Length: 371
Image (tube, rainbow, N blue to C red; front, side):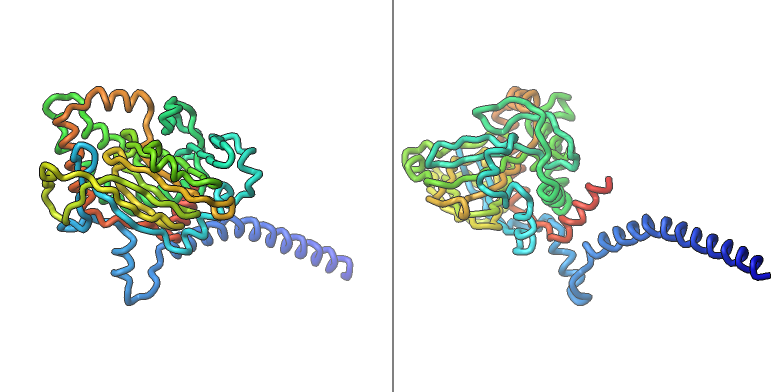
């Protein structure tokens, strides 16, 4: 009887242990799914029940019924809008955790994907990346006009890509409306020939707005001499018709030449004799602006700094190939250009652009990792 009970007890113990292993094995992936789902829900959870509607409104960009940003005028009196915004402290702190923005100075020289333009005592590094969801390289044009060649552009860091992807998602209604208005301004339906409005609408539909990133790192001696001599002044290529700049470290000043006007829903060309004035806009850590740098002469001002106080800024523009931009310039006419820039300025003047919250960026990061 004792031996029989021992055998029975041994069998029961074995079956019980095997059952525990099976349950544990099933629980691991199930637990991960529940944990993932909980994070995604928490990412969009409002702060309190009383401000639920207000918080939801603030997290989504929309178009106002009347202008909330003034329309200025740049080169050849072309209308444009300058929208200022900023990242909150929590989001900026998380941004700086990515290696490129927090690495030791000696590591910069070992990063093969950085363009090293160091001429002591001026230290300049620039990295060219894309901000699409994929972690694979994307064939596109190098935004540096001194290089200007197509190459297999590497993906930016995961959090950086998630931020710009979240920015596109949060402000989707704005850019969808811009795309629809550009299509309305285009003559493509009648002529079946592409024009500049139709091409930009297509780039937005492809999700390529803010898809091309230049990460610029500056320290050492400032550039006051180039600023005074005029060497620093320029207008951007067509990819900056929508240009989002985010400052992560250091201080710099954006100088631009614009004719400023009052807020108005109607574009009013400057009176004859009006000339652009130089406007200075400080860019501190966390500051961001959205504008059309193609349409205004501008120059960044850098100050004397060491590595600890270096300037780091990300410039996000349209992602395109050389074939795309060459076609863009080939189909450009004065009439199509005026229609496109008018639509761009009128739409952005009413655009309540939102910077995504850290929770929204982390949710987008999780989505990218799981897809």
